Image (tube, helix red, strand yellow):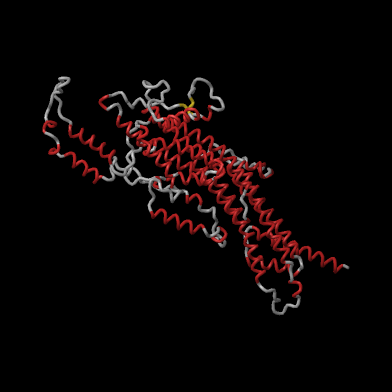
Length: 557
């Protein structure tokens, strides 16, 4: 009797030690270690017990991992020895993460959870390999029947555990995502958060085929809140740009295209107005690399979340021409062409008296005058250089940022596209109110324009422009609108000597036409992102935006 009790005690202690050894495989899977543990359970006839315990350990590992990661950051930022955080629930602990530590903590959280999921993935691989091998007794062993295991039970248990473990991961990350108000995050920081969660959802897809509804819903809630605030701030910023814009040419290189801008680097194959074949080749190479699953890429070492921030480093842009010229040599050649005295008529070299005013003779400043004029003419007439302003570039960059956000977070694609359309609408409305309105001809202020453009401007005015700004406190519907911009006092449109601001009018109109062309080139990309039920909105926007494009200039004349 005593011997039997002693044997049971010994077996109990042995199972406890095995249980501890089994739990260690949940964070760092080691083939040799796991093989020994499984062999021991098999010899004891406890294979099913091992599987039950294994899933409990993985669940506990997820909880302990996320709690320790978040606790570490909270205590570090608190800067004191207060132990109250250790007694908090994980969900409450997440609300104490500071804005500065939010992204580093999220990265470490995902890294740690990846290690747990990778261990489970490798555990399944181990059992699959065992199933492929014939079960033959090792030399000298006579207890072969003990090696026979219920492989069907193990397989079902492991497959069922995939979705359970991923659900636990989602719920833990959801608590972290919703624990902080991200509405005031910097754009680049918020994009990093979206990228990390997007990568985590990719892990879930490969791990168990999940669409990660829990993660999608939580990040959508944060994104809608963030984007609403972000877009409102950007519209106000755009109004400030427009009201300070002098409508002078922003000198960009003749080969300028949006793919050179940092905000469009993510697109790769966007062809607006052009993208070099080398960029398309690079994009194809990247896509081929992406075909290999994350669990294949990082099965032995590394982590899909380790290099994320480094990949986001901004590349140097080279889109602006030097003083409006591609190079000093080109500038020199242009000046040589127009600066030679032989090209200047003799009468312009001499002093003269204005026949109209009788003013005193003036020393001719024709050299500088011609240099200035010809330089301006050259800039405007370069064959391939688009005519843009600083504000145009700002709008283009915003469009890139918006599409990047939409690309990462498809559930709010319609909201983002709607806001992208408002950027163009506001720019169009500003150009018209600054340069196209002629109240002398029509009391409505819509002047002599085509009916199509009139419809577009009416829509913009009704849906986007706050016509009562500054009169009363903004109502709920007016919070979604922005005041009409005012032309800078530096822009004079009443001077006959400048042909009533002809240069500014040309720059404004051409920059608007370039924006219209840009949106035209992005149509297929935006259409692919738009939910089917919302596609009519995009079609209507392009139909009305086309009223300002080059192909409709004749209709507007």
